[in-house]
Amino acid sequence: NASADGWWDGGIWLDGGYNVTIRDNYFYDNLGPGIEISNEDFQNPYGYILENNVSTNNYYGIFIWNFGTNEWPDSTILQRSNNQFTENSVQNVWIVDWY
Image 1 (cartoon, rainbow, N blue to C red):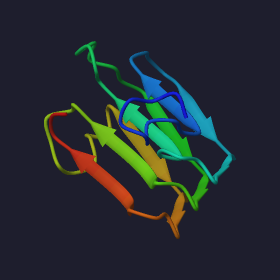
Image 2 (spheres, rainbow, N blue to C red):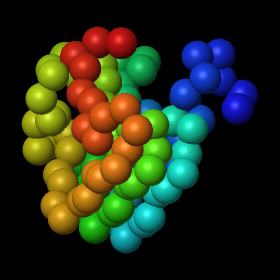
Image 3 (cartoon, rainbow, N blue to C red):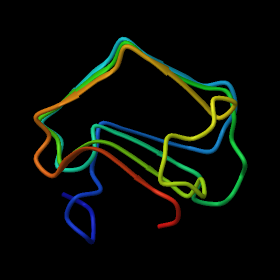
Image 4 (spheres, one colour):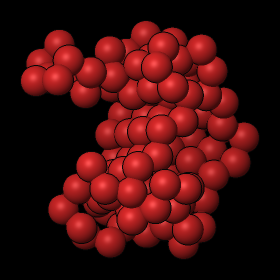
């Protein structure tokens, strides 16, 4: 655990970039989120595809932040289909507008 808060270590962290696909993965037993998607430096990323992933037994199933909404980001930013977020210890899906 290399994090200051004790839960940042996760399966995959996508921050910035364009036209990135995360597909057919199994994220499990992480101290942090299975999947983390952020806009930490306000780079205005777009074209993310999140498809056919399973995130289970992590701290959070998925953590999304800094897109200015508490809902899933607009489909121009993130398209998603057939993902499963189950049995994560704190929350399966956590989306915050700013962090």
